[in-house]
Length: 416
Ligand SMILES: *Cc1c(COP(=O)(O)O)cnc(C)c1O
Image 1 (cartoon, rainbow, N blue to C red):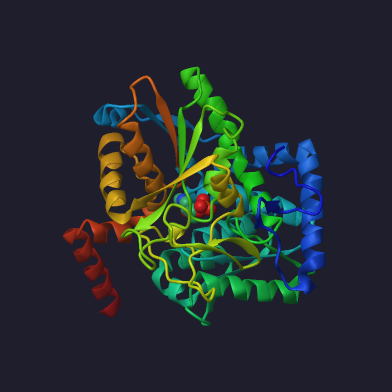
Image 2: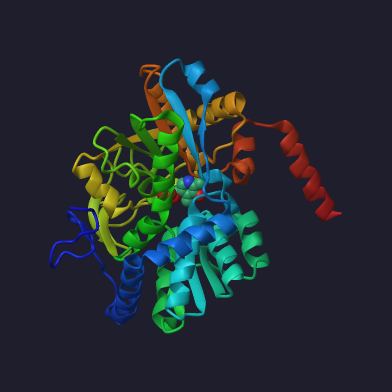
């Protein structure tokens, strides 16, 4: 049985995880979305329309690149990367967002709302809305608005309204709550474009459906390049959408091991990381409309998480991945901030590639294991996005004095 062939009475459940826990007032809207999505899924011309849009607008198919220098340097398995960094807006997020834009059109809705933490999903959603002609409102915690100004700048200039949420911790969790409140009020005109393979059913399935374009392409490309399948496939996991996207291409291939890499931050211990499944600090609960592992205390209050990669810094995880861990199909590892900055330097200097800090978590696990494997073996890692957006964080980590001076000079110009 496939992941999305639900047993009677268990629609939206992946083993014990998933479900839909929402205010009753949203039931009709969520059902309408689900029915529209299932109609599209049954219609082969819908997938073709989506693929064509991604070819023409986002530069798909993205290539698979053999990282020869990196492989030689580590002396083990051949390492290949799926290049989601080459998408428009710089990451895989656009796959989901453009797909949901097509759904929104079919639903006859004219307005899109979304939550965003680091701002990458909000940026992609604002881009899609500009292109497809929707009104767009992005909810973002006030703390995140303050620290992610470049993304806020682009969202606003693309025509979106960015609402800085002042409730609670003023971060992603509070933005999600505010976004749901908006949906309840405006559901007749508004589609909620959720950003990852989390949240209430049908969102984990919808997001996975569009992201599977990554795995469908990658499997064919890898076979064409090498004549075989990779021994292992790696992806980083925030909510789980890029991992679900790549893994779906290989999930039926028993010989291909699927490895997920979470944010190990500064190592195990509550508050130090965002590794929900690789470390033992998360427990099962229901929050934000679905059931999964959350980093929470005994009272079910969400705890602080930490990662150098803002896009992996999330308390929950895809219910589908929680299930695939439990069944043993996906193995979970973690990469610490320190490993990430070392591996980023290694990949930049050997291959001239700049993976996003998020994606570099996948590279850490891939490099670690490739080094112990045979030269005749091969691994594929999802380069989920490009690292240009991380220049502030990386420059800090590398203690780059020239960069600091540049920022000071800029500030002085504005003061003058
Ligand atoms: C947002 C983001 C992620 C994490 O999200 P997933 O849903 O787990 O894929 C990973 N990589 C990049 C580049 C991102 O922008």
